[in-house]
Figure 1 (cartoon, rainbow, N blue to C red):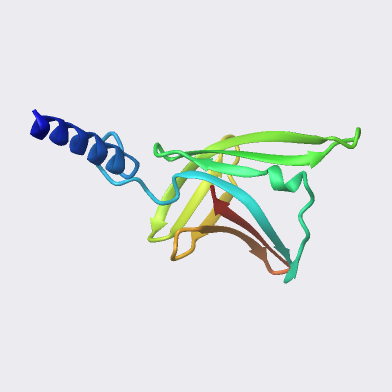
Figure 2 (tube, rainbow, N blue to C red):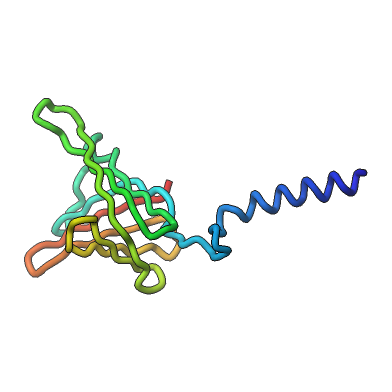
Amino acid sequence: MKKAILTFVTTIFLTTAFSCSIDDNGGLVDPIAGKWNFTGHIRQGEEITLKDCDKLDFIIFADNNTFEESNSEINTSNECQAFAYAGTWTKTEEGKYTGKYNNDDDVITWELSEDGKTLIDIEEDQNFRRILIYTKK
């Protein structure tokens, strides 16, 4: 009886421990999957101090290659107002991803740090460079 209980408890533990890293298809879940909080902003090489409203921004990447993003701005009533966006993402190579918002042709690029704890979104052209930094919750 003790062996049966120990086997049952071990099975439950192992199932729970590994269920977070395996998807329904039996494959490994991509490290980008999960919720990422907006934690930093660098524009033209200068760090921008985040306002309380900015700190509410996040992106959630789902295993089915979709994402949801919430961006907050101060409205005319001086209140923080959230705007939701959705889109799809694709892994282009190890640690690098691209995405497109629904109903928009602009391509977003993200790069995951080697330790998997930081995600950056870099937008640049010949006259402008902006880096958004996200950390995983």
